[in-house]
Image (cartoon, rainbow, N blue to C red; front, side, top):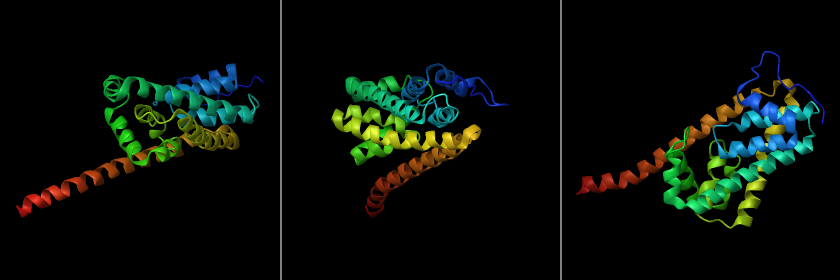
Length: 218
């Protein structure tokens, strides 16, 4: 593994980017996998920073592209499995009690994810791995609902591989401009949140409309 300084001229060396840079430079692929596993367990850690940075590192020869893709996908699966078993072992009521005490997350995030899972099942786990915000949370209701572990592993691995490949390759191709990926994924995250809010609003409106209609007729 080559020793290459990944810090960009004029870019801060601290924060999440600096932390992820240190892991990748020190440990190579396993460091990238560890960073992504932690990103799954702590959603405020952004994959849109860690994955493109890993791709950039691969382009600079710090690790191979194959190693970057393998370890980040393995890290995603490990983090997702940990959340799955948290959901399975704690159960729905205790999971909500614990979630309410966690910093930087909201109970409403878990509620939205659980509702989406109940409706879409397997498709939710697969597609959820490629949706910002939901990609980490989707593992929890899968555990609460006790989705068969082999099914969960297959769907999580496939979805994670697609998401990771897109972001790692973006960083690989963009080179020292890898950080622009964060801007685009950040916009996507805002769009996803807006659509989730809109979907909830439409759902509530449909539920309330019949009740108000019956009240007027009476």
